[in-house]
Amino acid sequence: MALDFLPGTVQGKSLLYAQALVIVAASVLLAFIVRFLIGRLSAMAAGTESRLDDILLASIRRPLFLLIIAVGVYYAIHILPELQSLIELYDRDFLYRNFILIIFGTWILSVFADAIIKEYGYQMAKRTEGDFDDRLVALLDMSARYIIWVIGILVALGSINVEITPIIAGLGIAGLAIALAAQNLIANIFGGITLSFDRPFRVGDRVKIGDVYGDVDEIRPRFTKIKTLDNVIVTIPNSRLIDTQISNYAYPDTSLRLKLPVGVAYGSDPDKVRKVLADVAGSLPLALKSPPVEIRFTEFAASSLNFETLFWIANYADQYTAADEFNRAVFRRLREEGIEIPFPQMDVHIKKD
Image (cartoon, rainbow, N blue to C red; front, side):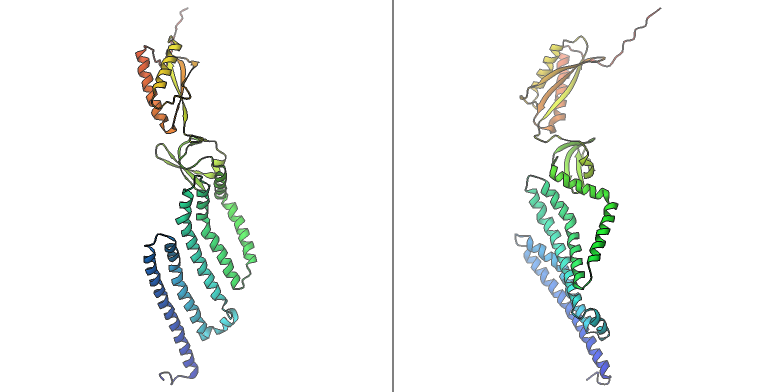
């Protein structure tokens, strides 16, 4: 043979190294073959109605490729004579093989769970009327992968006889430290959970929160986004929403009562003014017939007699259009009726001694 001139020990080692290289090369070749086959299966799965097979194949493609190579390297290392003493001491029962399998299994499961939540969780949540499930899915989307990895790593460490009780205790202490350092984050998340149960508003509702007025655009575990009427997105932490007064214009329904002030000059006939305002409000296309229009004489102001016109519209989104139509119509009618619209003025009387 080609190695006959070498001592027997050297020949044996060379053969073991050759076997190790063959195992690594075979595992790499097998990994590429498996990746190719998964790619072909993915192309076939793309033609099916279900997305589950696409998600499953996408989840296992990269982890399985690296797992095959890692297992090949693992068994190749066990052949090397220089490492036999370490293997006998630490891995005689192939404990680290289980460790590798658990880690890669955790990787596959975390990717698969994350993809399932994104693909199906949000779709299912949108089909329901309430928004509690929307917020729950968002919370799962944010935390599921981390939870799976923490559990997987603990199980993997337990498989190689590592005492995980101190680790769990350490995680508890670390969790307490993180909780103290991230009080605002945790407060916002618990605020989101509270909002999920109380449900003071839903996506699409017109709300006023503090000085922010607009439509609820998105509700997330940590924050809520409001789109103002100027098309500006305002992000409000959920912890603030718990302690803030919230006005919801879309609940229990979308109808809204408008209160529009009108001032006329002193000397005007209040009854005539009331009739003009009632006629104008009652003739508006957006004004509801029931409840009826109300006219109130509210104040003797410094320069005017002040009235308030109250009428209902079917949708809060029309409030500015209705107010514009009312004001323009009132201006025309008051001018036609000869009723003066006052402006602030001051009469100064000079008394001579």
